[in-house]
Length: 378
Image (tube, rainbow, N blue to C red; front, side):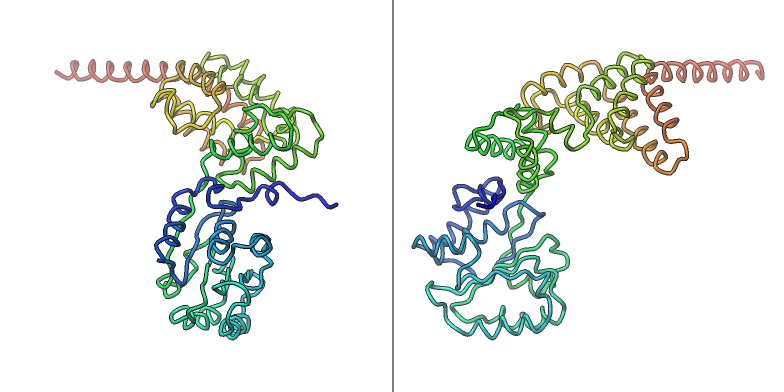
């Protein structure tokens, strides 16, 4: 049998299984209980946050009840729950065909439900054709529109829908779900790996599960962050930690050595800058808000280690480092000698405290000279 990817096998099939969008799930459940179901909904949010899954679960709750119908709806193959990809059916003729078919009553369920994915891809003519039907739809017709770009959906369409904005799923919730998936797959994994995968997903459950699929294909009995770093060419966390320690210890030689170790692994200069910026941001938040803050998403062990490191920095120094890295990152992209800029940046970051002290001395000397000059004039 063909392999079914994790994102499809572990897709939510019930309101109670929804991850990260519990408030929306509860609202839709209550709408059904109170018989306050609207004729049109607009689900907005980035990819992989559960828009299509929620639409199918909602449709199943309205039209399902029998196992074969429920399975067909969740597979996107039910005759009364029609799924349309607007990206490939964007023309006015497609909209007119939809409108013509909407006049016919459902075959098995109570409603004929149209799930239109990436609805913002419809042409203006298609939107105009659809508008009249959405304004006064037949009593048996319902629309659920989904989009990753709500700004491109005309206001006339939006005003006829109940809009729900799907948030990016928190890293901790994605990591928890990945742990559940791996338990069912009977595969062990480091907790730190789950957080790394969740963060790389950028709030998208599907993206995180796709990355996990790639790791499982390695055939390893236990998944580790090293496997992830080798597979994706990511900077090794320990080497980035060595860089940060070199900065706080004022050791430019150690900084250059750690930087070279990263580049020798095939990590690009830009990737190294990105990793440093991300780690410095975490340190800044921990340094400012304390180690209990939920503004930093790390596993327990990583949080303890990073909190200890944050205690050696002060917020002003970290802000200075972030600004310097961001500036030099842009310069390195357009430079004929990016390695020279990279090394100079590492040395400068390691000498931050000394350079600050030198600047203080120069400034103090300048003020003293100004005072002597003023006294001489008197």
